Length: 304
Image (cartoon, rainbow, N blue to C red; front, side, top):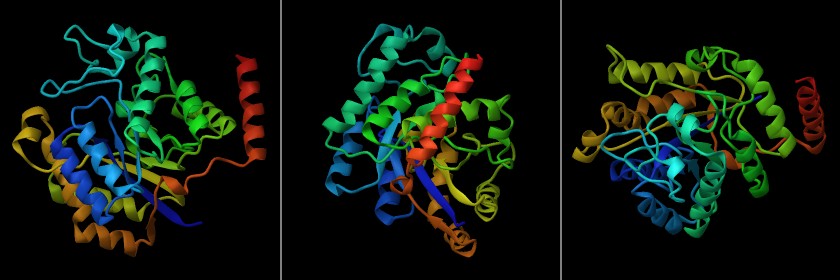
């Protein structure tokens, strides 16, 4: 098997600082794709650029939270249960899971799909901001509904088939493998494609971390990449006053922007024989595999 990597830029449309960096990386072909945030303040700017490119690889970053004090946004549907006491989407996934009405969440998800369609964009895939739809805080998961919406549109979703043991964050989640088994069965039964692995890294600058140490850790991931299709996500942004005003960990986003342009990183991809790919290469399992997944899922539900 070959080793392929999807590098996805999250938070397209969040800010002008993010848009400038992501547009540059897409234009240069340094990354695979980006995912758009319809509720965010610079969505229209990002969508307008995508329309001019037509075949650009962009997806939908389903956004149900608004985490930064200096940059808040409301839902598209304006349902009160989706907002905190200040009238914005919740800052944490726990508050979202505890307070958002399920019917309102499903309506907002559909509204965000429709927003990218109205913008004239043919999305290649779907993912989720902060993992708010996974049920990580309270167990209230909206993945079945999201998979259904992806299935109708024949679009893959960013989830992963297997946990890469060297990914310390994902491997540390309690009962992750047993939870993932049911998720994969459901996605396969509905014909929703997904990568084999997801590679994570900390959002914030860790104690003692420098650009060089950060670069070294990402290059090590390239050389250790497992066989199959993996995805890693970045949140690149240019350094400016806007970014520094709303984002405490702004330095990490600037580092991510610089890393993808770094000749050492480009050399590592080539030297490790890792192929940069995108979500257009992700296909759902065959009809026979889907049938097996449906039977396995039915058996799992009957045993509960």
